[in-house]
Each structure stands twice: as structure tokens, then as C-alpha cells.
Image 1 (cartoon, rainbow over the protein chains, first blue to last red):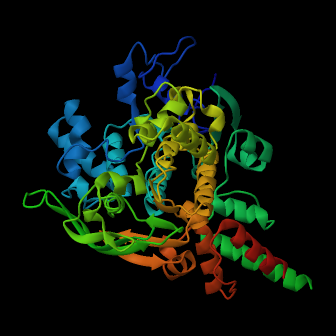
Image 2 (cartoon, rainbow over the protein chains, first blue to last red):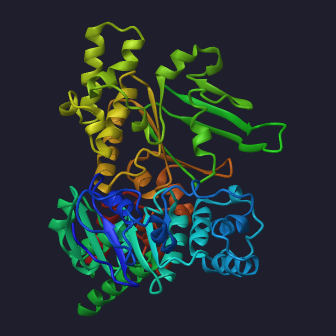
Image 3 (cartoon, each protein chain N blue to C red):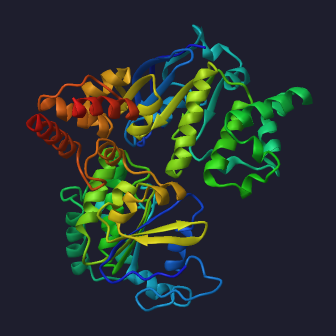
Length: 251
Length: 271
């Protein structure tokens, strides 16, 4: 496969189990080495210079339990910086900033095991942000969270757009409706590199790649409303009311 | 089988600084042939709860009853045959060179004759739609196929209650759909299913009743139309849409399943 993510782009990666999504992420942070071809991350070859790459890349995993190691939230967020020998003063500032960026100010002295899944995942994200990565690799970061946790984590990720290049692997197409691009991987091949707008209208391509639109998008489509775009239940209810009004007016 | 949990408390590491009360007096029953969905956030006690259903965990206090008989008086092997528990990521336990041998492992160990073992392997593989995979190596299958084969291994024991802990976790949407169809099929065969999930959409599709756990207590239990419409914050986005429409003057009842909801909304929109 061949692709390039530009600086600051938010790129979604979807496709069936075994499609190659996780392999792709592992190639990008040097956990795997490609048999052939060239991988460059921020100009570095992850296989040859994994540390240069990992200094610039933050990776968030599925299981929120995996990333947390310290007794208090603030220690956890500081953990990566301690390993890199960031000076104390600077560390304190960066911890505060990172915790603020994920909306957990006031949680500094909380014990991670008392937090919900979504909160734990945000603590893990704060730990990454404190290291000021240029690139974020997100490997199904919401798949083990409930609906509320998923919304929280997605809101925080959304707020990080622009400054960082983000590659987001997920089974939930609904999380990518406002991504810049979506890569579809199937059978180890890049079978599509398209905008979300185009992908959601392409029923054939969705079926071929075992992709399912989020329930609200399917409801909207089934009711003849504008196809998939990010919307809340309240948005959809208002759209439906409008449609009923227009019909009544037409009579 | 009717499986009843009565006032179950479970305390982890009692008497240590790590003491945690994971279940605080939970009572519920799994009725014969029903699909009971168990919803709850991380740390709500879902996994702890289901491990009491075959006494893999023993309650700190409270009783588990099987058709009215205290489960603690039954033989453990008998109880575990009748209440099959499928953990999260069960495919991690696949080990045999072929799918058929993997599924045959438990019934064979129970000392069933080869004819019966063979019959059960066929039957459970066909239930999960994996007959065609029987001679394949379990390690060469896709994630969704592996998951179904692992479930077939538990079905081969002929459980009366099948407990599935987050069975769709990590599966792609199509494989998730296959699993939900399997749950419906099992229900038709009279097997009760307990479905633990954090995904309200999938629970809404298959559950006859829903139990919502919160911090080790039952917060709500009942038919999906009641539980979801009384607690819209716990409901799927589609139900929330219907509830929001109700708030702005368009009442269409209490549909829960996707197709049902779409139908009701269509007739509203088309007048």
C-alpha cells in the first residue's frame, strides 16, 4: 500500500478484521518492519530509528487499563516525561496543560482505578500530549468504552485536530464522519482513500468492506434525510420535525 | 432453567487496604429461554456479576439458585456444564490443530462416546455458522470466525444458560451482526442467553429484558422499552431521537429495535 498523511491531517482508517489496520500502525511506530517498501514518519525510518520516531509519535491503545501505571493521575501523566528527563518545573506546567486539554482539571490527585473507562482513556491521552507528539496514532481508542465514555474521548480527540497529524483506526465509521480522509484497508490492501462524504454514499463499497453506518445515519437515510453527517439525536429529531412541517405545508 | 441471584454481595480482597465492594446486593433472575442484556459502564460490576452465575466466583453473601435449588449444593462440574460462560476474547483459549478438535475437547473430557462427541461438534458448529471451517486450523481464521468457534466450544457442552461477556468486543460490524444473529438463533432453541455489553445498540437489538448495573447495584431492570424510555441517557441514539421527538410534540410510542424505530418514524414522516 502507498499513502501519505500531510502535517495536521486527520485521517481515519477502517476495514474488516484482518484488513491490515493494526499492522499499519505497528509499521508506523517501528514495532514491525516492512518486508519491502519505504516507511517514513516525520522524515525518519521507524525500523532504523525507532526512538526518533517514538519521540514524535504518541500511540493510544484500545484498553484504557493498559496505559496506566502510577498511583495518582498527575504521576501517570508525568510518567513519560520523567523517563525522558524533562526538568521538574517544565514537567509540572506540561502536566497541568495536558490534564486541562483532556478536560480533567481537578483530577490531578485522583487514583486512576477510581475513574471510568472514558476518564482513564483521557488520562492516557494526557500522558501522550504531555510529550508533545507531532503525530497521534489511535488504535480503536473507544472500542472498550460505553457510549458516554466514547463521546468524551471523541470530543477530546476532535479538539486536538489541526496541530497534530492524527491517524485513527476504528470500527465505528460514525467517529470519522468529519475526518479529512478515510483509508479503507481490506485484505492487506488500501482499497479506498476517500472523503467521509463520498464513502457514506457509496453503499456498494460499504458492503464490500463490511462497513456499517452509525444508527443515526442509517435512520436519517431511511427517512430520506440528508445522508450521513455528524448529528445528535436532538438534531435528528428537529430534522424530522422540519420534514413533517414541510409536508403539512405542502398540503 | 431459571437461574436466580438473590442479594449477591461480592467484596474483593476483604480485610486488606485493597478491599473493594464490587457487588452491593444484586438480585435478578434469568428466565428460561430469554435473552437478558446486562449493561453498565466500566467498573459497574458486570463481569463480577456473571462470574457468579456458575459460581466461578463465590458470593461474599447471597445465594445463586438453579430452578430453586441452591447452586452451592450442586456439583461444580454439573453447574458449569449447565451454565456456560464465554469470557471476553475467548479465542485466546483456542489451542487444537483443527476447529473440530477444539470444539470436541470439552465433551470428550466429559467422557461422552465418540458418536455423541461428533454429533455435538457438528451441531454446535452449525449453530454458529462455522461447519465449513471444521478442518481448518483455528489460528488461520478471521477474528469473527475465531470468536464463533470459541463459542461453539462452550455450546458443545449443551448449556441451558449461555453467558457471553462482551462477545462483540473488537469485532468488525459485520462479524458483530453475525453474533447477534447467533444469539437470536440460540433463543429459538430454548437456550437462555445473558449478554454483557457496553454497547446499547446491540443490546437493544436482541434483549428481551435489560438489567443496568451501576457501581455494583441494579439501577434498572425490565423490558427494553421501559428501561430505555425511563432512562433515555442509557438508551441507544435511535431511542434518544424518538424521545427527543416526543419532547417536541410527536409521540410515536416506544420502539426499541432499529427496524421497528425506522418503521415508526417513516409512518410519522409520511403521515
